[in-house]
Length: 235
Image (cartoon, rainbow, N blue to C red):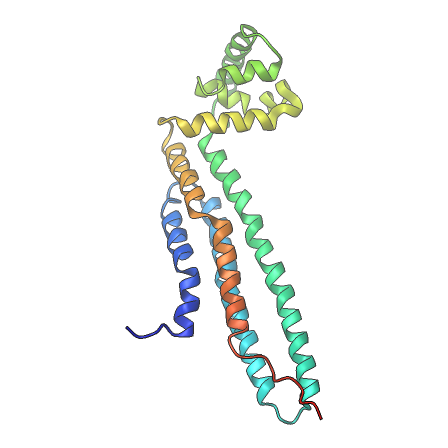
């Protein structure tokens, strides 16, 4: 069996993560255009990383061949080039990392009940029911809300709206996290909720943080594929 070429070895660094990303992308149908747009932005950032390394490698090769420059000068330029690309390879992945919590939050929004399309009269009725249910439970407002969240989609829609935020105040984030956990475990919901539930599970399996790391590794491998400029000969 022939030994893998350098390009094949580097491609292998991202092969598994690329397959996981493709599987995750397949789960994004029916979860909303905003989620797909954010994922596409994430994917484009990753795809650009190896090219940064390849470009740096080409510039280093050209620098080695430029005999018109003194060796010391070429060595200094090479160090500056590596330093500059290193900065880029630390800053560029930051954009991809910022997309990960956005994707998770968008999918959670799609998973949770939403009262936006419910008429005001019905919402008022649901809030009355919610207040009655909460008042029947002991504890703080957060403890009361936690005891009933996940039981009734109409109540959850109100609990997770501005109305619910006003009820529990600074504890709203904790309540939302509780609701996400409950709805992840359910099997019912609208088509978007069901799709979002599957995509959230796929998000964990996709390991987007690992995909970013793999593409940075590939970029660095391209950048340093050739030996560094020779050390200055001692007189």
